Figure 1 (cartoon, rainbow, N blue to C red):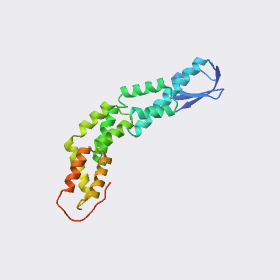
Figure 2 (cartoon, helix red, strand yellow):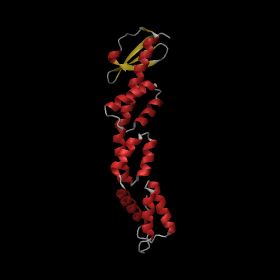
Figure 3 (tube, rainbow, N blue to C red):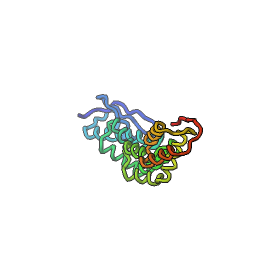
Figure 4 (cartoon, rainbow, N blue to C red):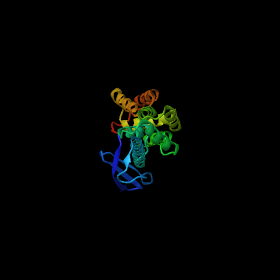
Length: 214
């Protein structure tokens, strides 16, 4: 229903908050506030202010998130849903930021894979699961994993992790199962895990020592 403007309050970054007699308020760009205190707004004017407010609140939220660290489009969309941004406004914000390169799920996937591979020693199966959970498209996940992994890299990583886990100890069946479980949790291919653990079980006996790592 129509309502009167009772306050126009300046805000940072060239914004102004428009407060209505009924208690509703909207924050919009200064240049869009072409009315004065006491103006009676029709229903369509209020809808326009509401949609403008949603757009700027949603875009501000998205940019704040991305300024802290890269996010996937799904992560941004979920945050905008919590702000109760309408679907078409949310989708417009996502499209705008994607077209501008601010949201880039392929770049996110590439950087995530490289970081988790190099710092956490994670394999492709674990990384695929994590990226899927974050809403990254399958093609982007495939491309990122293909760039960072091949069977030789996987085996080298799994072998290094397994040898660190075993230390210099002779590996028996029980220790081998623990190492296999660790490698699977890290996300390595089952065939590679079996190959690496088989080699550990059949390597020459060495000093009894065990070093725990995670």
